[in-house]
Image (tube, rainbow, N blue to C red; front, side, top):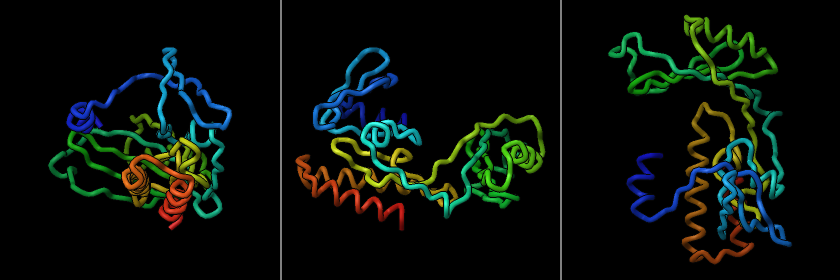
Length: 222
């Protein structure tokens, strides 16, 4: 992100603001006219891209796009993640991600240059959070670890593009991290949005939005 900001966005004149969004404003037809920051600043645009993650603050909360859960078919709905130091960097620094099956899900191991990223994705239908932590600590071979606890909301919104809001990434949908579907779907959504805007010279019709929504449903639903 920092690389893209410095090398691509800043030279292109992209304005960058740091703020917390606290509310939105709409017109009589339900289109967003501005988002209001904690600083009191109103940010106006023709198109708003929702990147608020599982919260989906704009696409779902404000625009009412229905969320369709994958829960009947996918059980893994929890994750605990942590960072650990290398014990033997020459041996442990591999160029692959390893996934290991545990009792109620699977653990990932991602070697980075300065540390190892690891975590346990599991189903709360088959194991409690406390027992999952205990099992994962046993897998890691240490109790001296702190976890970032994540509630996975797997599913997809019925529409990715509603009026002048487009959900990208987790705010639109998420399957399960084993095959890095979050990265693939995020890339597909961005690529699809750019293609539509470029093809239509920014003059987008309802037909274009419907086509985009259909194509993105195909991406996440296979």
